[in-house]
Every structure is written in structure tokens, then in C-alpha cells.
Image (cartoon, rainbow, N blue to C red; front, side):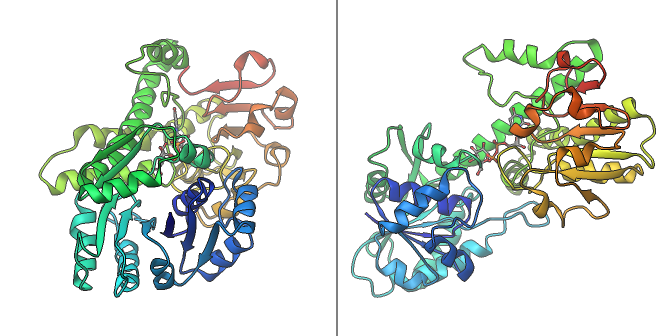
Length: 431
Ligand code: UGA
């Protein structure tokens, strides 16, 4: 099939590469000429493991091209996926301005187009957005639903770092469609996938995305709340969650206690769902608590470190890991941000190290230093917090920490094992 994709961020580019790998002809669209040129020269504008060689092959084989010209790309294709960002507004609601402008551009490509076209939203949007915002823009352009175009919503469940695998082997494919014809066309896009396809209403598809992310975030905050009790009474929360997770109705995933969840999705989606819930007169008590527990965890980590180090004022403290999780350079809503601010507030001198994310972190927190290696960060410091579960940190051993002035290590992601240390003072969250 001929498919165009508006937006070449994580979701758009990974979806484009995945669909082209499955044999479709894909045109990626972005307003940013730099990103378009980069894709056409087979260099992904985002860091995602394994993407570059595959993109290279697809570009060489002409299965995937990129352009800044939305109208031309829409005219040449039968389906357009909208994959633009829906960032948080100051009140937590989603900002749909990119979605609106992408739909306007798209509508210009549909005017005068002879064949039926499916417009499918992939961006994360609160229930009602596709029908209340996207549809009227297309209709205002003189296009007729059911005759000129069909409307769909197909949420993504990609995790950064393993996004391509998640795209190629999803647990499920959710397709919301306004009518049967649209659902069938969208189901055909995923014909070669070995995953169950769920056909549903557009609004349900929109809600499935939020309900999934919120439940995963709830599991994490739940594990963190239990971990606080475990710390007080000498229980290891990881052992507890291993036992809890053996119940197949619960499962062990997303029950790792630590410094909390960050990233471009969970915090933003929770805020948006809270805002949506309030807007329809429902007080979202669970979701509000999930956010509160998460905001507390990085501060709790600083408290634990202060217990070990003593007053933090004037002391050099290293933060190992600035990305919101391992294997990504993404620092959006990283727990390192509130953690660093709290350390600074208590007068510490902080030095951060990350294998990939330091450049992105530069503008997040002022008055901190950056190191080029773990050794640089640790040398002379009086305490360190491991904030990201990078593989590089999992292989650290006692001698690596002995360059510290006082080797106090707070492991915020359970990447190390306390049994391996005799001279290092090691503490971890939830034990
Ligand atoms: C998340 C979801 O997992 C994807 O399914 C979804 O498609 C995506 O959001 C999105 O909406 O686009 P992602 O943000 O890439 O994916 O990251 P996750 O791997 O889910 O991790 C999120 C955060 O939770 C990280 O900060 C991670 O360290 C933390 N986490 C995760 C925990 O603290 N404990 C856990 O047990 C698991």
C-alpha cells in the first residue's frame, strides 16, 4: 500500500520504517528540512537502536522517502497517518495545535484527489479529539466523510529504545474506525503482522492508549509506595514484587521500584487524562495519587543519600544517568531533573554523567557540571546517585567507586548488587 506519515519523531519515523519493512511504500513528511534531508541520506534524526541500518536499506531500495511537501505526498498515497506531537499545555491538557495544522495541510492534498483516502491519527489524543478536532477541519475543506475520506485512530505502544521491535511484534494492534470500510483498509496495513488486531470505535482506541499508559504508571507508583514501607521494616521490595508478579493476573513487569517514571509519555499522558477526567466532572483520585507518589521518589532518593553523606551543602555529588531510562538520549521528564534541582537547593555541587544524554540535559538544569566518563564524575565526590539503568552502570564494580572521596552510592534503579561491596557504602531504594 502507499502510505504517507506526517511527523518524523519517534512514532512517525519508527512506524514509517516498520511499515516499509513490511513491504509498503512509505513517504515521511516533516516541515523540518534538516530532518527530511537526514532521512533521505539514511541517517535517523533520532537515536533509536537498530534503526540506522534498516533505514539505510529502505532508502536504497526506494521503499521509504521523506519530503517537506505534504500536499504532494498525500496525493501520491492512499492512507495518511498523523504522528505529530501533542505536548502538555500549562494546565496539563494536550496542545493540539500541531495536530490541527497537520490536518489542514493534509486536507489540501485531499482536495481534488480522485480516490478514497484514509486519515488515521496515531498521535496520543484524549477521547473525542479525532472526531471533534480532526474531522471538522477536513469537512471545512469541503471533503465528505465516507465519500472522499475515512477516519481512523490507531494508537502506538512503542517503548523508546526497543521501538522498532515493539512496532514489528506488538502485543496487539488497536484500530479505531468510524466505519467498516476504514477499519478494513487499516487492518490490511497490518496484514503481515503476527499480532491480534482489535477493531473498535475511534473514541475507544483513543482511550485504550491512555488507560494502558496510566495503568503501567500506576504499577510503578504502586511498587514505589510498597517500597517505602519495605524500607522502614527491612524487607526487599524486589523480592516482594517477584512474589507478587508470579500471579499471572498481575505479572512482574513495571513493578520495579526506583526513582520513578519519566519520559515523554507517562507524565504527560497522566496529566492529560487527569485534565480530561476533570473536564467531564469526574475526580480522578487514583491518577492524582500516581502522580504525587512519582513526584516524591526523586526527593526521597536525595533524602536517602543525605542520610549517608550528611549535610549536602558544599559537597560534590555525582548523578550517574541523565536520560529518563537506559538506551536513550531522551531527557524529557527525566527524574534526574527534579533530583538535580533538589540537590542544588540543598547546596550540593553536582556533576552529571550520561553515555548519551548530556547534551540534551544542558538546558534542563543550570549550575551543574558534566563529566565525560563515570570516573570523571565520581573522582573526588562524596556521594552518587545512579538515576538511569544504563548497561554501562551495571558493569561497575567496587574499584570504580573507590575514586570517590567517600564512596556513598545510592542505587536508584537497582542496577548493582550490594553483596559485591565491602568498602563502598551501598544503599538502594526499597530495601
Ligand atoms: C511508554 C510505554 O511503555 C509504551 O508502551 C508507550 O507506547 C510509550 O510510553 C508512549 O506512550 O509512547 P517509554 O516512555 O518509552 O514507553 O518508556 P518505558 O520503558 O515505559 O519507561 C517509562 C519510565 O518508567 C522510565 O523512566 C522507566 O525507568 C520507568 N520504569 C519502568 C520504572 O520506574 N519501573 C518499572 O518497573 C518500569
